[in-house]
Amino acid sequence: MKKEGADREERKLKSKVFIPFGGGKHLCPGRHVAFAEVVSFVAVMIYGFEVDMKSGEKAFKVPDRATMRAGNNTRNPASDMEVIIKQREELKNVEWGFELGSGVTADAE
Image (cartoon, rainbow, N blue to C red; front, top):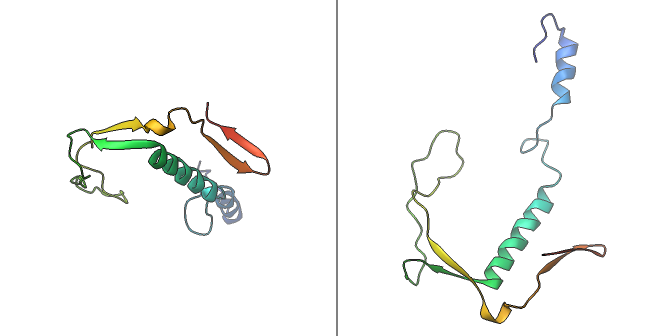
């Protein structure tokens, strides 16, 4: 919020209070944990499930991409990619869990 009549020192102090994460010299301190969670989830999905194209095609095709808009850092697909996800038969009775370290675990229930 802007305050009329604020002196230079007050404006400088106010700008130091808000430090957003994501780039520059102030990166998110939890970015490594978030990355490890995403990679772990993807690894479990690849290992534990079969993913097939709904159309019956054997190979995945890279979908056409939509027009890039200002402010986007990646191009979105032009349409949805329809797939069928099935759990692998040999892993039907497997209970999944992740070890977080230091004896702490997170079981998938």
